Amino acid sequence: MTLNSLYERLKEIHGPQGKWWPGTAEEVIVSAVLTQNTNWKNVEKALENLKNACKNDLLRCLSKMSLEEISLLIKPAGFYNIKAKRLKNLLDWIKNHDYNLEAMKTKNVNEIRNELLSINGIGKETTDSIILYALELPIFVIDSYTRRLLERIFEIKFKEYDEYRKLFEDTYPKGVTLYQEFHGLIVEHAKIFCKTKPDCLTCPINDCKYKKKAFEK
Image 1 (cartoon, rainbow, N blue to C red):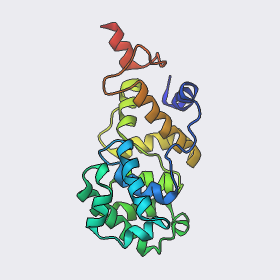
Image 2: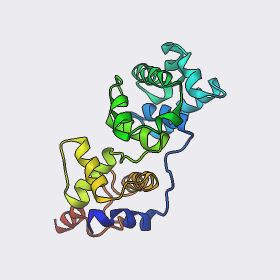
Image 3: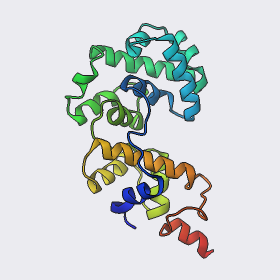
Image 4: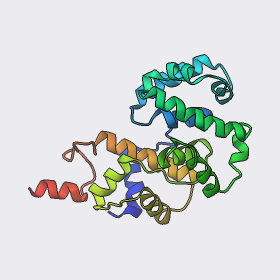
């Protein structure tokens, strides 16, 4: 198997994933910050608190809150003081764009990416998640699961985040639907089979370099 066939192979195993990241565009923006260094169940609890506090227009509502108010609401997500500051920084940027997500979508991907990366506390994975799942512009999201699969299946390992991203974008045609589903498939496979301690015995991908080495021992 090559990287070119990975998407179809994962889709055969796990079935269609669709958009994968749940929620409205506003919820995706917020959860992209909340999900840093925590699991999704904790993010859901924090997001539910925010939605209960803001019955509508989530981003405008949160912009009016103090850091202390946001920290208290997002406490289930962990690192709540740090995340509250990062969320506030992101909300200030969105406010400067008049909360107009549709207008943001008309910008060049690199332009909007550079703007997001200039925000204190907003890194590449968070930025690309917002671009792909909230603004629905074509950019491939790289996370720890992606790195793990590439290293184990293909023995591919890079130093820089963007090296991984460009590898996928050079291998596959640019497409929001494709990138969203592909990222979701990678996460699903890593959670079920390619865990920190991999379950190679039940993993359906037999031509995995890590698996072959494991069974040679």
